[in-house]
Length: 292
Ligand code: GUN
Image (cartoon, rainbow, N blue to C red):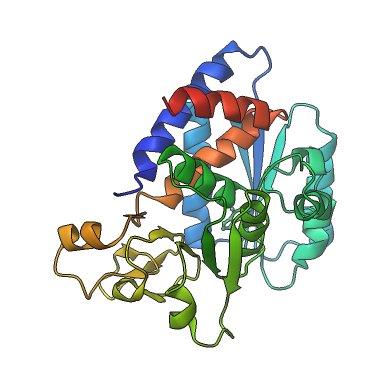
């Protein structure tokens, strides 16, 4: 089975659009982009385009790469105090001279659609309800639920320990009663650990998972994005030992492709967060209706 995040995200975005139309006051997402990283610019423009398509207001604040940390924090404080702004996203990575921890701490947790602030991350770790769940892990879980892939009691191996994906993914999986192993660049015998996984979630940006080596009928979720030698977008899953797609589909239970898997789900998940503070209520309703 292919975990088709592209189609599922479209369904979710359509549902959000219907909800947004009913609102007198539209959500308004502010995105701050510091510097001129081309990949970040593409991501930010995609977020804006998606928001506009579904009736969510969005403003991109572009700041030069030599912007001082204090100036960036002033922008954030202005957005915190602006009642029209419902969500704030500071695109990462930031230029090296800026301390990202100070920036993250400046965001109002009630507008922290990324779930980056200590309050929201702390709540997540304590099993309490954060104002928002982290977008990529949330998008992955929505996708696994949609395809009826069980999580409770499953051994999930998460590869990558970033604050954006790996660490919050582990917290959300624990909340769902999975047995979780987290691997990273210092992990010994990664292949041996991978072999024991029911579900593998890889967020590295390199071809680290040789799919012929995984357990038969495991579920593979690819969060990695890199470019191959021909400049084509590719993920962490290495399928080169297989002859064709049918052989892959016979061997694994399911996998998410790159592009068209986790990427679109992350944007849909961000839009869900931007829709409303009571995101979980709306999420479950949207989930139910779009999961029918
Ligand atoms: N850079 C790469 N992914 C993300 C994300 O999910 N949120 C933010 N703010 N920056 C990113």
